[in-house]
Image (tube, rainbow, N blue to C red):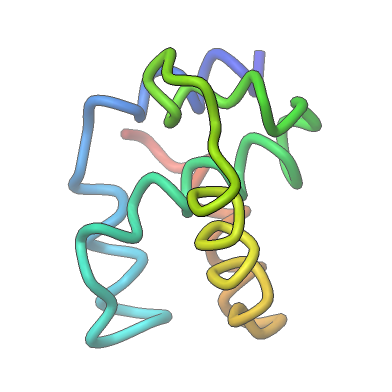
Length: 90
């Protein structure tokens, strides 16, 4: 069920814009796939390689490194907001 919610949001942007405005002002839209991957791993408990945000591409080391940088930059407040964003209406 949660994996399906993440998949559904892959083609949507409003949820990310609302989260970024409230929890991470100044965040670039290019970070949206990393937010989806974070939700995939930490909320839906999916495997990083199966994250729909990769769009079927084989993950490369540089993309994984960018995701890890995003993941490590989130504070607890931002993580809680990102987890809660998955449960809000898309």
